[in-house]
View 1 (tube, rainbow, N blue to C red):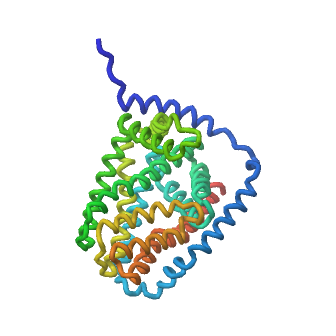
View 2 (tube, helix red, strand yellow):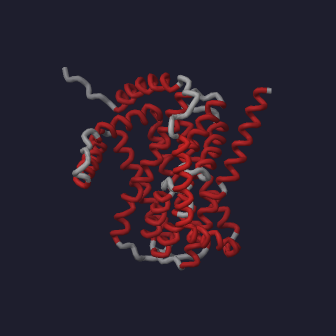
Length: 363
C-alpha cells in the first residue's frame, strides 16, 4: 500500500512542536546585564546616524521646507491618505494578532504603535521597537515565548514581502509603460500585489520553489564572492525558517499572508493619493518602482526609519517618473507625513495609554 505523501499540515504540525519547545526555552529569564561591548555599539550607531543625517540633510530640509505648500492639497485627499494608512495598519495588526494566537486587539494595537514610534526615532531602531512591543505584550498578559515568536514571524514575513516587491515590479518598468495616469498606476500596482500574493503563497506552501530560490541565491553569492567561505545550506535554512514561521502563524497563514500584502498595497495607495492631490500624471511603472525604492530605503539602519534616505530616494524617483520637481518634493512630504511623522505622537500616545492601563490594573 502506497504511503500517503506528507502534507503541508503535517509539516506545520511538526514545526509547531519544535516551536513549542523553543518557546519554553525563551520563557526563561534573560540575564540582568547586557552583553559586553553594548555601550561601544551604541556609540558607534550614534556616530553613524549623525554622519548619515549630515549627508542626507539637504534632501530632508528641502522636503520639510515645503510644508508651507501643503495648503495646495484639498482636505479630501488628506482624508484619503489617512484612510490608506489606517487600513495599512489594520492589516498589520491582523497579522500580528494571528501570529500571537488571538490576544485582545487593544494590546496588539497599542504595542505595535508604540514600538513603531520608537523604531522611527532611535538609531537602528527596529530592534528597539520590537523589544518595546515585546515588553508591552508580556505586560498585557501574552506569554513570553509566544510574543517573541509572533513578533519575529511577522517581521520576517513583512521584510520578505518588501524584498520581493521590487523584483516583481521590475518587469512593469522593463515593459515600458509610458502612458501617463494614476489610474494605470493603480491597476499596475494591484496586479503586482496580486502576483506577489500568489508567489508568496507558493513559497510558503511548496518546498520546490523555495529551494530553487535558495539554490539560485546561493549560487550567485558564491560566484560573486569566490574568495569567501561558500554558502552550503541556504535552501535548507530557508525551508527551516519558513517552517518556523508557519508554525507561529498556524492554519491561518494564508490570511496572514494576504494581510501582509494588503499592508503594503494600502501604503502604496497612500502615495498615489498624495500624487493625485497634486494633479500629477507620472509614468505608472516608475511610480511603483519609486514606492518600492522608498520601502527598501526605509530599512536602511543608518538613520531611524530611513529618514533622509527615503526623502532623497523618493523625491528623485518621482522626478524620474515625470513628476515636477516641486510636486515630487511636496508629494514626498505628504506621504511621509502619514507614513512616518504622525507615527511619532501616535506611538507616544499609545505607550501612555498602555502605562495608564497597566497602572490601573495594579492599583
